[in-house]
Length: 462
Image (cartoon, rainbow, N blue to C red; front, side, top):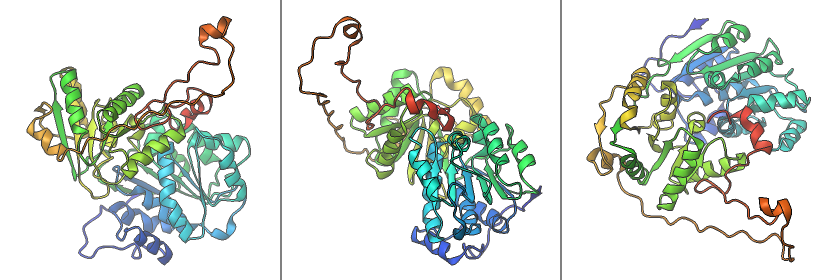
């Protein structure tokens, strides 16, 4: 494995054309306001375009998606499309990341005459199968559903020319590496492989050694290094009630902010509390069905909801522009989670603030966690109206009344017989359905059926 020299500043800004990207893709990027590459793109794209196996390591928000998307699209031929036999494959650990990768790929693929489809669990596979049978060039997939379709012979990977593994370390954290290994074994050994990861621990190095041929490694910043444009704050509070008031205040500003919780239940509860108090909020966690996840994330992206209350499922792969504040309402369990949560702000050159709210009994553990994350910041004892808090909150957004709850219409106008026996004891067929959960969400997520099986493609993330 060879290593590239570190990126050095240049007097003349590098363009995508300078890296060898074809004009149609340069135009597509320019239409979205993307005119100059980031360091990880400058480093990796020339080697990737040349067909080398590439190992890219960089902090969250550094521009890794375009770093593999541009070479992937450039190296595929639109004239070879065959049913159920893609020529490009991107593996991602979660549905959210897979969806965001597809959103980046699609306009570029269209400019190059290529098609993209996304495969993950938690939704019906019929549309995914139909897209594969119609013929698709690039598949962006989570390992669980992809293996299901491989077993059903709905997809064959023997024509894959370029394979990308994104967030490989997160794949390892979720226990997906055995599935990734089986998938890579099903692709041609002579194909190009690109692997992007923040670290090479937890078995990622075994993937590199087994499936990559003389890879060139490009490391942008140290693994797990904090983002320079990110300002960290540690707020000590006296107890649970002081914490509640502080979180309410931090959520009340005009800009987008993400609040991280440890459990699904607490994320759903806080989102509802904030919405009921006039701060439009949505939740994102593993108990939501895929349509509910998509709906809530779309509401946050569009600005319909200013606050996203999430578990670690959103710590990676969720990219929304202009998130100005990330709040660790519950400090995470380990330092890598802290950095990935925090990385939802200050992305791609923007600035942002990160707040960790700490109860007295959490102070020692949080101090150790921040030390491991390389964060050196002096804690401040605060209450909700302290000056440091007000400076972060800025202008308070106007109160927004929560949307009224729409009453459930009766299923039938016919007269029902009184319930008897066990039907009466259990509520019978006439029992009223339970109302939906998280604030802004129309569904709490089914407990069973398809959503239960979706744990293979992301529901293991809290």
